[in-house]
Image (cartoon, rainbow, N blue to C red; front, side):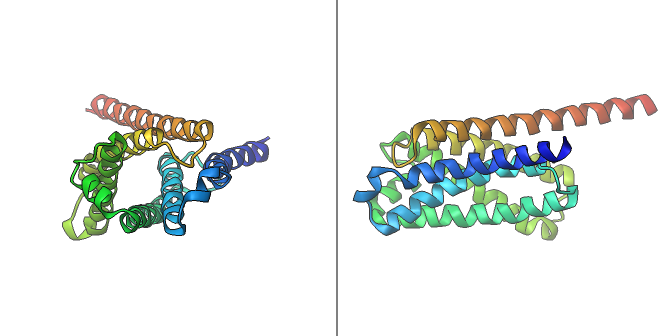
Length: 207
């Protein structure tokens, strides 16, 4: 029974991440896109999939991974997320610099650009804080105070950006992935809040 549950969890995650990529690969719109634009677009889809994996790792919901391995995987996938975003933005910059300048300056007429750029800066901010955490001497509590709000911005910005973009991503698989991203994030936030409340209650009882 436990093996079947582990297999189901990993299979569900694999399908959730890979199905939107496969659906986008079958899109007829790719026939009118250049190779750099296509690479940039798929980098964005992969980035959205990685955003789903991150809360699952930090919440300990992926079986077969110890807490330590989960944290290490969270760290490395965070780096992969930064790379995917850089490829996504860099490719779009190469194909249309004026549009990207407008997006980065928050002056683009397309609403999805605002959400995407906001999520991008939040991702970069988390990556920078993670890289400088030891040098800055950030304690776990301080790190969480900075990281959790930025993570919420990343999730909301990424989901809204993805849903508003009308491109090669298939609508149903995209909506399913975005729903899972939101659901996983809400679950982690609720669990963290419950653990904090429990620890505070135990502390007050001891006193």
